[in-house]
Amino acid sequence: MLGVMDNSALRRKALFEGQSQRSVTREMGLARDTVRRYLATPVPERQQRRRSSPVTGAVAG
Image (cartoon, rainbow, N blue to C red; front, side, top):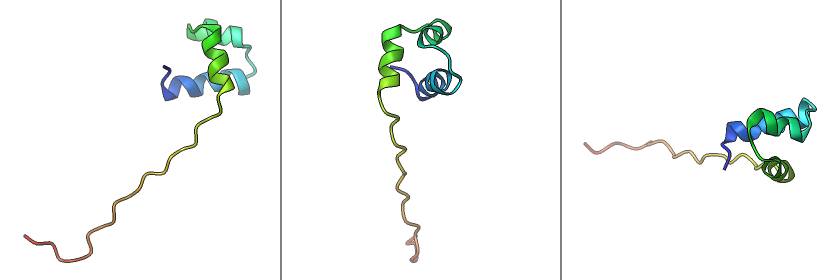
């Protein structure tokens, strides 16, 4: 499984820089099927972290 940085680098090279899938596979050392599969899947949505609410009352000590 590729990391987030590898996945974004793969997408950038193939989709934005216009490199062919074959040249991306050579450059990154991946199989063509792997590149094809990662380009076929949609980009996952970013998940927002739920922040814990701050302590507003008196803290027992």
